[in-house]
Image 1: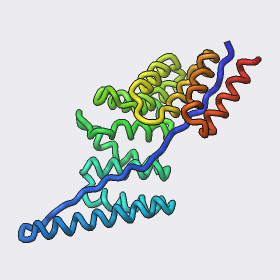
Image 2: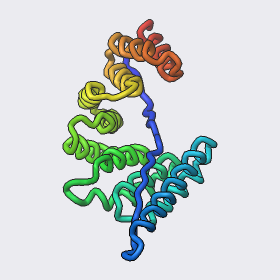
Image 3: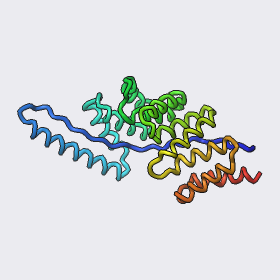
Image 4: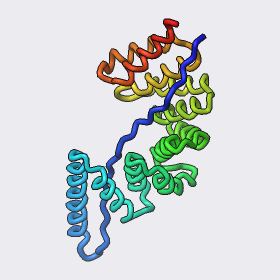
Amino acid sequence: MKKFTRYMVLVIAIGQLTACQTTSSNSVETTKKSGDISERVESALEKVALSNGSKTASLLSLEKKYKRNSTDPMKALAYAKGLRHANYLNRASLILTPFTKSGDAYPGINTEISMIALGLGNYDSAETYAQQAILQNPEDHNAYQNLGIALDAKEMHPEAERAFRKGLEHWKGDPTTIMNNLALNLATQGFIDEAIEVLERAQALSPDRIEIERNLRIIRTLNER
């Protein structure tokens, strides 16, 4: 059987979270309203920055929110996602690692840090964090995908296939990214016909995805040899 050498593609997105604090005992309601307004203004500015393509401005906003309360896991998670998006992977890892020490990490943190570990090429860590995320939430489709990518990188292809299939089973939204990863995994194992079938289904769902068309063309060429 002919085999295919796959390249990993990590999908990165910025998360946006907000919160508010009150400090004055004499003017709690006024302070709360002021804080709410401030948060809404910052969120609006952040959305404008994103729409204008200003990643730096968005990241600064996330950093400001995080620094107000660095023990808040929601703010830490949002900031770490922003850092990962900006390719500050080591910094993102430093932000989130303290939140993984407890037995019950805030939802999404193990999944996010597994993705950061993938970007750093730390596949053992990525596998460990993805497994922890799955134990925490057995329907976490992103964690299954991260696990599959880590296992593929470690040449544990049958195990990676199982992770991708499980992730696809629980996937929410457009599944073509994980279908692409599954197809490349199958091609790596020499299951060319099945890989082509998966990519054809992915292409039918998202005909404008260039990487799907490219991989389909490459794998079809392998099948003709």
